[in-house]
Amino acid sequence: MTKNEYIGQHLRHLQLDLRTFKLIQSHASPTFWTLNIDSLFFSVVVGCLFLWLFRIIAVNVSSGIPGKLQTAIELIVSFVDNKVRDMYHGKNKIIAPLALTVFVWIFLMNILDLFPIDFIPYISEYYLGLPALRIVPTADLNITMSMALGVFVLILFYSIKIKGMSKFMKELTLQPFNHPIFIPINLIIEGVTFISKPISLGLRLFGNMYAGELIFILIAALFPCWSQWLLSLPWAIFHILIITLQSFIFMVLTIIYLSMASESH
Image (cartoon, rainbow, N blue to C red):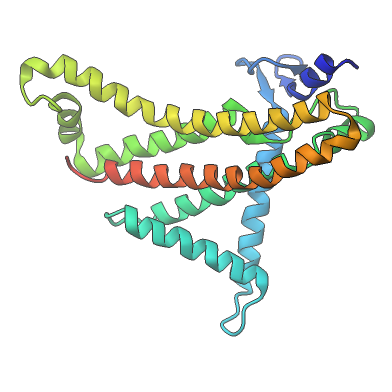
């Protein structure tokens, strides 16, 4: 195939048409009747891997000299716990597990971007006959916005539960200008600020991971085989920083937004 066809092939999702239950490939975002099967599959797989791995360590935890895997997981849990204690000033048993889940799950989905760009798609096409496959769920806007929407629902829930509906509505209508005449202006300003939280969460993660995936595709498509290692290896090493940083940012913003939802103005 040509370079344009090669790039286009790697940007197509494997979709399931719910009306005919047939697998299709498309560049477009799924409609109501289609699902991005590849994104859903790999996000569920790494999510199950996360749960299984942490469950095994929790069941077999040792109080003596821990193994390397237990030490690594303890460091992650301690790191997330410290961040929650520093940023969340209320009392809620859900925040720390949620932050841990967000950080590890997004990190595992991001790290799939370090697989060779043609490795898993080639296996799926050769052995399973699949027409297309993208293995990085966070490079799919539907996945990142779904996670951001979940955080947004929690923000809305705790804002109303902790503050009450009346105080929550006062925050939307009586700030920054504390006068009834400015209620429409306040509502617009605070409404935009409120809605921008999940949008910024989802778009930031998607944009960075999509750009990273696209660079790997361009390196594979535009340069000869002998020179690809000279370009893809440094980018992969740098990309590890991006993968970790995006997971951290999503986790930190989740904690901060929920902390703001739990406090009165």
